[in-house]
Image (cartoon, rainbow, N blue to C red; front, side, top):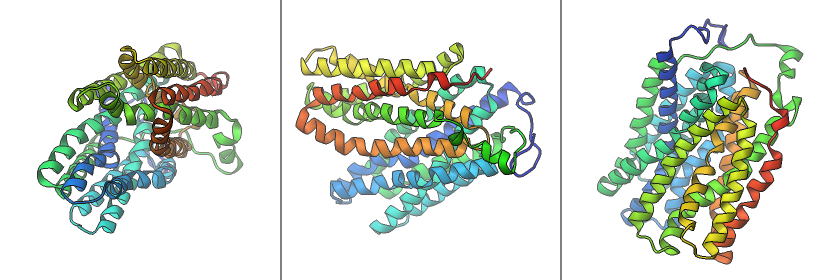
Length: 405
């Protein structure tokens, strides 16, 4: 086996179990550090508004900069991973994120701050595709779902780190001091990747017409259908995630502390839900059947939540926790399936497309969901959101799936 640049690499069976799990841990931490940089800066809003006297709109625009950077760079990083390998992409992306985050600590000009955060977000996008490819490449199919489920814990883990570290440092020492958190996190992640991660083996690369035939998007609509399913399922995920805290405090009369604790519990349960869904896919030797089951369950949970919220039933609270868990369970399944079908030389771009579609959809959920809640109320918004997983059920390409034994 060889890497894209022709250098020798080891086979999947030649590394120890400890090294394999070490690379999974490194990939998960790399993803968590990237999340601290691109999503965790949202916890700067209170400090920007209260201490730096930005309007809420201006503060929101500043903390949105990394997300725009991620969307701009996902496919490009995926292309580079396809051609140059995972390790160099992870190192370059994490190092760039650390450098631009550190640069952001040194500026007080709003435009420059936005640009540095945008570039930091663009660098962090490298981890989205490359860390997943490391896991897919080093774990055999019968254990890949579980491994990817663990890797997907990087997202809630990164948000937890940011919620504690960024929010606390910003409150006590200001925004610029808090920006050292993503800088340090991604620098540490880059050091770990440098020590632990090896590019997984790949089959010999084809050239000419044979290489063109490998384009998975030209072969069938399997990947396009998975992208569509993921877009439909990301809507209930972000409707619940964005407005759960507000619903608990405004409609259910909970204190902010109690509501925040329940949201944290829901995120933790969601992380373990991803692992369970991945392990289930290994047991049944299918990614698509569990993905369809998740869509069915998410549809039922959102519609029941809407009914319970409308009738002001106490069961609405456990239902929103259940909906929160179910609405994130599909992420690892779809991510793994895309990487498996796209193959070693296309999965970077395919995962970039997958994540870009989800990011763009998630960006629209906030304003559209807010409009729906304002004009229709929480109950109707939740119930109508449940129709999107209903559409996803039939779109899941169960019969187009190939076995990976």
